[in-house]
Image 1 (cartoon, rainbow, N blue to C red):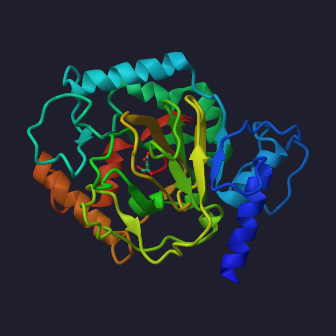
Image 2 (tube, protein in one colour):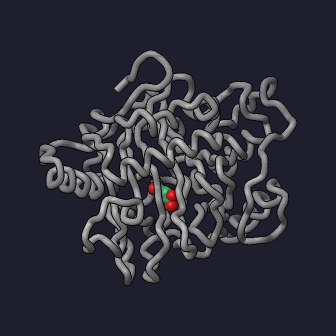
Length: 338
Ligand SMILES: O=C(O)CCC(=O)C(=O)O
């Protein structure tokens, strides 16, 4: 029954996107003509009233939990992010608090400062050049539709998915981003993820389970994968593996905005290239913190605190809130209410 409902929803999603059956969906412009300005149905809970999204786009996000905007970020900006990432990889630029991650398949090999060995840079808040992504007016314009006008940056990532060694360690298991966040309400949090080149099933594009943002936060743990799993790549427990999924094939500059409860992940990189994307999580500056002790997020809090203690000497008795307090940054509006 649940399966039938999910299949029906997938057909509706593909119908909206101009396809009838294929498993992979190629992102199309989301500029439907109908405006939302004069229409305020009370059932809208995941999007806010403003005149940026068309009614069709709004309904699409409400129903599916994601929205692709074609060609949003310019080639020039992408080149600048790419160049800065290379400078970071070569250690020409360093920032305290920025996390440099490697793939589990190469983590024991000798470290050479080059982009071949770095799969992700997290928390680039202090890097002026990469952080420009989080302040681009074209990004914030859409973010505001989900967060409202007071916007803070809560998490940043530049992802460089390497060619897979054959052990499928470059996969990112299905997960919900809310697992990592100690603030609410979830509907006022949104991710922006921009493809820095063409992304497709061959190089490990994002895959999403449409409509799953309407569920609740589920327990997460490390998947038991034969080749190992990357640090902080938690996977959701107990989701239906046969749920219909949509593969978001996107062009350079296309950007997907998605809800933090949407179940998503990405496939292994079968190509010889490094699949790059830049991403930021935004939240309303009016969100409030929650204590994750006693919740399914507690294991993540323990994990990250252990890592930060080992690497940076961060106090062991700190909390997830303390980590975020050091990082959140206002990008629009007057104050952070945390
Ligand atoms: O870019 C990817 O491969 C997946 C990114 C993602 O889902 C995440 O880091 O939470």
